[in-house]
Each structure stands twice: as structure tokens, then as C-alpha cells.
Image (cartoon, rainbow, N blue to C red; front, side, top):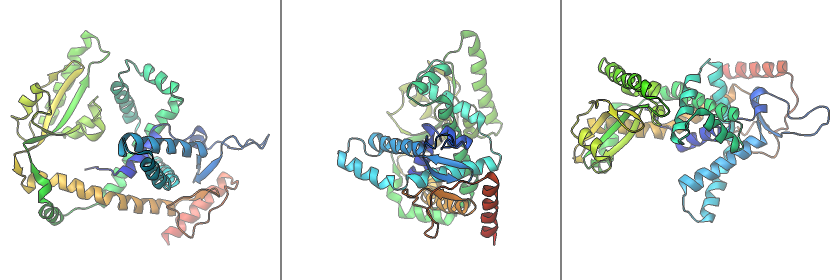
Length: 375
């Protein structure tokens, strides 16, 4: 039921395009003692990590692209600029939030390395690169070191996992709330005939003819695991090579005429919970599952209950996430350089130039903050 809001998505995307600077990842110095010349301006120090001016500039570029290409595509320039200026106010806050969530994940010992490899391969496939080396060269030619790109994906996945584990369980939705929402929004649940599909996709790109039987067997084995009671969505997350893997294989809702005829003829004859046999495509082996089926007209509550839960969950995610981030801030030290604005900073928090601190000083200060928050 993970349904993240756009602001949360942007917070993750800002780092997926390059991650925190190498200096921030290593805690490296920004001012060489030998010359006194500033190589990289530190904007914020978050516990033992830093956010630099380059990180902030990269986030600005990402935000502008998101507005121009997604949220306000084709809008007049003044409308784009107004939207950019409004959202830009929260950029420093979003970068601090990202650091706090990543640090929380690391402190909890979470590891997402297998997911990083899978996500990189999905990116490779979506962009039609034959090998991972081709992807690395493409990323490097765009001006981003591949290790920074990879670190950004790692941070994104770590952040998603922290939100799933620590924020998601705080949101509880009762049956009464779902029923009330259904009664008040019935116009939203009048549908044409539709199916909601998930997929597991096993790619054959770059594979030899000799490897194909083993790949087809992998797809068939996954079908058998579902039949034995394992969750289709969880298996898709772990084993699917498709771009939908991170979402548990969710393809979305389709009406008649929106799918290829061969697929449509199969899935519109199926009931909820049924799966296709393995389907051979030009790029791999595909398994489709009908997650839900909608007959024409007003849908009964039981068919849209999960959809309603997702809507309510989405509405509550941002306030709960902000409350969780407030808690993380209270347990941390966040120091902002004068001239920059952190829109989530408490009014009583001083805005100051970043002073020099030894590692021992930092540990002491963090310990004191945790002690105070526990009183």
C-alpha cells in the first residue's frame, strides 16, 4: 500500500540523479588548510554529513526538469517560473530530509545492494543499453560520475525502505473510514469494464539461445511459487526484470482496447487472482496476474476497498512523514550556513555559519540532543 506523494518522490529523485557529493559521502573537507581557498561551499551539516552548494544546484536543476517535463508540461514560461519559485523554497529542507532518512537507514543496518543492482539493470533495459558498461558510459558522458549515480540510487532505495518500515505502520485505516469515503465519493467508482494487472517479466535481452530454457523455467517456477501461496507482488519485487518491479509488478488499470489484442483476449476472460501461463515476447518471458476485475457500472465496496485505502494512505503520508522527520531532527544536529533557508527549521533553531568541530565534539552534541529529546 505504499503510495508516496509527489513531494516525497521529488525528495528521492533529487538524489537519484547524482547523489550527495563525494565530499558529503566521505565527510571530506571543503576548505584545504594549505591555501584557505573554498573548493566546495558547505550549505548544511547534518550530523556527520554535509550538503554542498553543488548538491543544492543539482536539486534545483532536477526540480526545474520535473516541472517542465511532468507537472507543467507545455505551460507558459511565467507559470513554470512561478511554480519553480514556490517549490524552490523547500529545496534545502528536502535535502536535509533525505540525509536524515539515509542516516536512519544506515543506523538501522539496512542494506539495499541487491535492489541497487536490480534497479540499475531496469534503467539499462528501459534505455535500451546492451550492457551495464554502456549505461556507465552514458551516465559518465552526461557529466555525472557513475559511482555518484549509483550512490544516488542507493540513497533513494534506502529512503524508500525507511519510509516503508517506520512511517507506513503509523497510518492505520479502519473499515468505517473506508466505508465513509466510499459513500461520499461514489461518483469516482463508476467504471467501464476494466482489469487491474500485475506482471513478472524475465528478460532475454543479451542472452544466448542456450540460456532461454533456463529463463523460461525461472518464469514457470515463479508461477508455481505463487500457486503455493507466495505473494505475487513480493516475488515481482525480488525477481522481475521489468520496470515495474519496484512497485510489485503493478501495470495499472486497463479498459478494453488499451492492451495488445493477444493480451486483451486472455486477461478479460480471467477472474481476480488468476494468472496467465508464461507468455513469450520479443524481449522476454511475461506472466500477467489479474489483481482486480471491474464490471461496468458502480463498483461494489469490496472491489475498490484497496484503492480507497491507498487514497486515504496517500493523504495521510505527508503529515506522518513530516512528523517522523521532525522527530529525526530533534535527535540530530542540523547546522545551516547563513544566507540559506531551511523551511522546516524550528523558529528557535539558530541559523549559523558552520563551525569547525572534532568528531568527538559532534558525538557529544548528538548525545546531548538525544538525551534532551528523551526527557
